[in-house]
Length: 519
Ligand code: KIV
Ligand code: ZN
Image 1 (cartoon, rainbow, N blue to C red):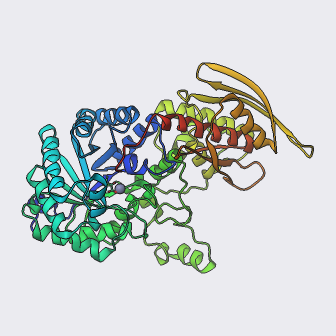
Image 2: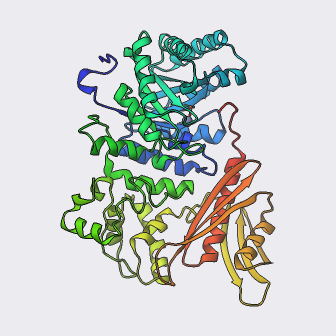
Image 3: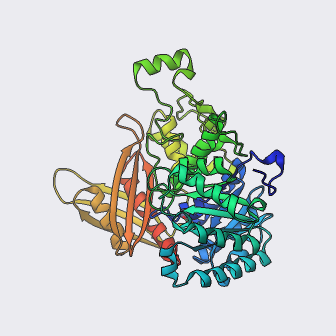
């Protein structure tokens, strides 16, 4: 196959498109704050992601502001904004991305029979709409991506027809979404092959693959599409995304690297940054990475059984197909403590994949010292929890915990004295409950009444020992909107209060955002 859209020397190069901040953030409970989005975008840019889908600008003022600012701060990555197939959405996306050195508009419409029913458009009417909206986007921006949503369940003849229309109207990338995670690897490859063979002009554009993981095949489907000629993979960090998530960036990138003998493709990703960004996304989204997750799970490089440990000690390749350091996982046995200085902390954090500016280091050092005062030995896991705690130093959070004291014991009810700052006001309350956590949550509710339901409360110890930190996750639901808050502290009740307040702060952000229909 000759792909004239890509120079011959670049035909093995796969464009990595990251949609953690759009499809990932759409996943129920994964709301991120403005600053968190900016930090993640800057990490994605730095790790060599080619295209960052920064958000859905029409969805809310907050989304628009985040996409605009990410566009302004972008260095190497193309910055893309999503829009439905109407002029208002497309104009808004352009307003947000136009500040980028390399802007892209991504516009989509559901083309399968089910989606045509929802939009009440017949094949002809939809074809006209596609021509008009893609042309409109192309008049604004030289880089236009078009997606026939639910492509894998769209009739082949109609899919070929609309892809041809979009190419003629000026689309430079055609993305083929498996919106409901329905396809399988062979079918995913055949679809791309069919489009390349049948659609006039197909060799002038880049085909992208966008897979969801409902049947656990998102990574395999994306790689199969690449083998068939797609040259852009849409993915998210940790596989975050709607329902079962999207193709995980770290999986496709490492698969092409480790099995380059059978998948001879290149990406521009600096794989040593994978672990750092994986931890960051887990922390801000509140979606912990499952222990046995490929590449970035806690156990991905752990060897428990005697035979495995013995083999790895003699020759790491016995049971390791990649080195931990390839993904930025450098484990040192250096335990930190209250006498450790700032330089040691910086170097340790760098080993763990965190690169901090001077101001950030100053802030983390203060929190590190506070922790070291309460806990004699600080392990890697403690530092990761410290770095993942997004409830500290968040000066722009609407609600903040200032003071908490609980009285607990064998005599019920337990009580909590709480000082909470809400906006400009400071409130002091006392509440009782069934145990110290319940009393604390009742106190918070007294100050900040709300109808949100507590959908999940989870505690896990970061390390062993009675002085271990606890990481608490709190998931709340209000009017179908789900948010997850997280915090760590050596005091489980304090961590619980902060996680609860973190969830409420996210809910406040979420209330401003009402996702548009047809997504
Ligand atoms: O899954 C999907 O179809 C999408 C589109 C908006 C590209 O996310
Ligand atoms: Zn999607």
